[in-house]
Image (cartoon, rainbow, N blue to C red; front, side, top):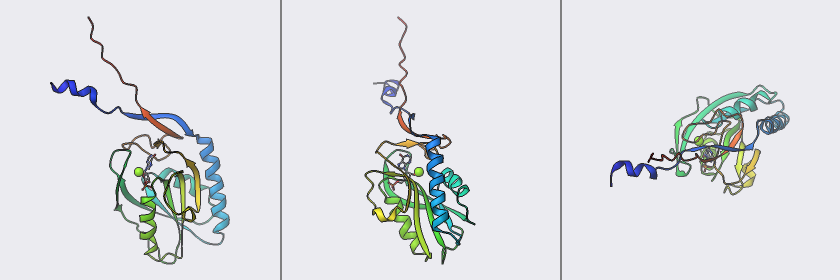
Amino acid sequence: MGQDQLEGDAEPELVPGRILVSAEQLAERVAQLGAEITADYSGRSPLLVGVLKGAFMFMSDLSRVIDLPVEFDFMAVSSYGHSTRSSGVVRIVKDLDLDLAGRDVILVEDIVDSGLTLNYLRRNLFARNPASLEVCALLVREDHSVDEDILRYEGFRIPADFVVGYGLDVDQRYRNLPDIRVVEAAPQVKVVEAS
Ligand code: IMP
Ligand code: MG
């Protein structure tokens, strides 16, 4: 069997399909979350901790609808390789610059899937003695396995489908889509030999 015969067995590319959450729905919900946070943290200066890369767009929009003197920091973790399944391992790729001691920290996440990343990050951040620590997640899977009390602010509950857009990627692509879309297999191009 020749090499070229194997090419047809390659996994189809995953591309954005139908819209799950539109740009309008995102803007409306983000505005509500910003208003809630503004009210809850009145008189304080919360420190927004964004989890890169997925949360960058959400955190950027969210911060603009919080009417408080917020500060920013970012950390990068890796829990996925380049597929759509969790590797089960969380690794800090870039740590925070700021000291969390005595701060009101809001951890900003793109999506809580299994909850593995969130559980790890909460333990890690609590160990740095913040005055308070709450979670703001744009998307939460219906079948997540974290304690419901942990999810103080959440945008949307979504089903199991893998999604991209508004910061979320598949193989580092489609983060710049203004809406959240379900990925699907790209249509296969069949090469038909002329007879
Ligand atoms: P967890 O540790 O299983 O909760 O996975 C959380 C991380 O997996 C998120 O921060 C995302 O980076 C990534 N992730 C999970 N589901 C999706 C998805 O549907 N699209 C893109 N990234 C996802
Ligand atoms: Mg990710």
